[in-house]
Image (cartoon, rainbow, N blue to C red; front, side, top):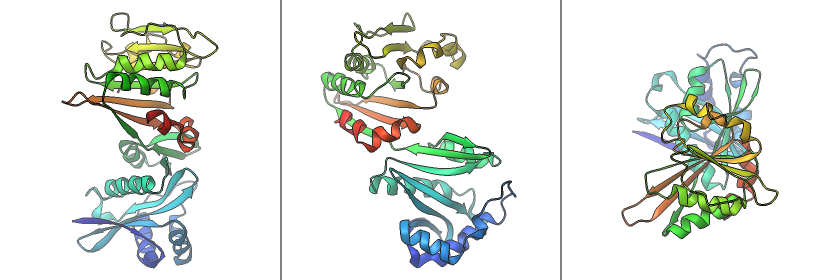
Length: 304
């Protein structure tokens, strides 16, 4: 049984011991990592200021991390698991609990630094929803923004939330929209088109693959893509959508697993339809573009 506990300076000795134990056997990096330079004083100060987590398995401390306050983001530092407990899912439990702490503290996401020389570590964070937001030499800035969800009892609610979200979008924004048949993807995109002020009607582009809807004013055009019939990302590339991305808002239906490479900053949206016909829209922002939008509460307001 593993217990993940939020701790403060009272557990500084245990946290320091875990940091040293979990980082001692890691490869030497250039520039070198500084985890082994941590002292009781530095760890106590970090815990007193922002807290941290300890993972306890069978009454033995086996993993830890430190929190840092980075404005709208919760920073993660010194994430480590002792060698004897690796492969038991401890790091995943720490990552999951950290996201809950970020949400409880009113943060819009989490950030950490990873090293490109440690590809397994980078893959772990990617599998836990983190993306590379920036790179400085071998140092990778990894970012995970928290998702938001809203229930949509009627089709007009689906259109309304699309209309409100359209008011938050700008040229260059990419939306990847997934959901079962009949979940309301086209209805949502119709509302989005109204919010953007583009020429309609917005209908499913299934048989033409992509439609372009020019702006009726001075805003961006809407590029509406249906990737259902596309076999892979190479076929999506053949549509030459990258020539429009900087000047348009692009919505790719059925785009999960295909369209992510079109832009590092994007909104991933999933529409799910329950038996009582209530839809749930889950919006997961990806990339730094959305931090100020989330911090200002604009995305949350659009989903209300």
